[in-house]
Length: 134
Length: 134
Length: 134
Length: 134
Image 1 (cartoon, chains in turn cyan, yellow, green, blue):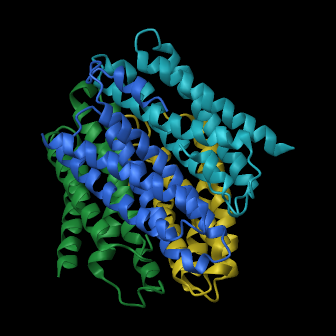
Image 2 (cartoon, each protein chain N blue to C red):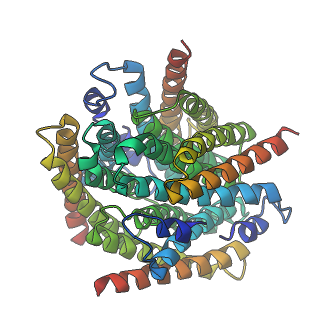
Image 3 (cartoon, rainbow over the protein chains, first blue to last red):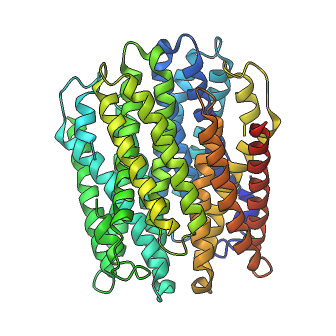
């Protein structure tokens, strides 16, 4: 991922790189991939019937992380209110998905990794949102 | 769009169709298309330099409406908190995009139509969010 | 959906509206919504185990239709080769999803509607691709 | 990105990890982010008028890489024809975007990095497609 390099060359950013922003973008793209993969792995499990809630939360979380990664990447005329609200919905989706995946973490390794990825993304969103409040 | 027909056949909905939900889904998909089209039309205008803010808001709004339409479409294990926060970020993105497009509405017909589409989508999101609070 | 109105105001289109293009854009957005809804309804069915293939094809088809709708909407500097290849992958995804959904059409009304929506979108993509070859 | 770890735990993959697939998934997500960032940086450049073609190709390429990354991530019931066609449209979009970005590479560092990222993603898609033909 070239988030750091790219942000550094953006005319509106002028070399002032915000580490918290970079981390948030990277975690969002990474978590979008992990959730897509976990939902798909769940669909291949024999006990899929018991994993439908997990699949749904994976799908929502993948979509929301994807768009949050895009919104945070765009620095031209970005709006603070939209960014803050997007970070808050992303943190909420990650928290829910992490909680559900954690329940299956001992049985399904993909759920264990996904729960971790969601927690990291949630924290990155929360940290960036906190920084914006100041 | 078959949102109404489809929701009516969903096992978790059981024929109880929520008109406000259907309207919100339809407006989200429609507004996603309109914003994509407006941003692209702006890029073809000779005065593109003066439309960059409009293009950025169109891009954000298209992405957010798209995902909001998907999240609202999914009825299996959908979470009220995520839905409410998603509706709030979508209403905010639509409001901003409508305000910016309105400034160019007299010069660019695509901006006039887009402003209208954004306002309708914003209202549909707000109405659905209000219904969920009860 | 305002695809027709919007395309008509695009500076690069200049009022020359291509009906086949409009129909393709509308079917893509509509089919993206229908496939998202069908995949989600399948997840709520008691026999979900037998519907996992259907869910997967729904997810792929929803994603592909969504992006095809966006690519076709953008008229600024659009490239014929990318458009043609995108239409071909969209038609293939729609055909596969229609075939799978058709198998469950008598049991699940959402699959019946989805199969129909996929066939219509496939035909719209094929027709637009044929028009571009001339 | 946890693509490797996740694929390794997928019930349909059973530990048989395809390095070419992993690389393709990683390059797709990475290139989606880079193109989103480059298009946005172009919008902030004073010479935006001369960069509209670049912005359009960035937008198409970001959308297509995003979905290709998702389609390749899903291993449950994935279809070879759809995968091959998706890889071919992704390689075409990456090639076009790389060629356009390369023209501005000496003036805009974001275009230089983006051209490189697009070439790497194109090659990863082509390599995976070749492997599938056998």
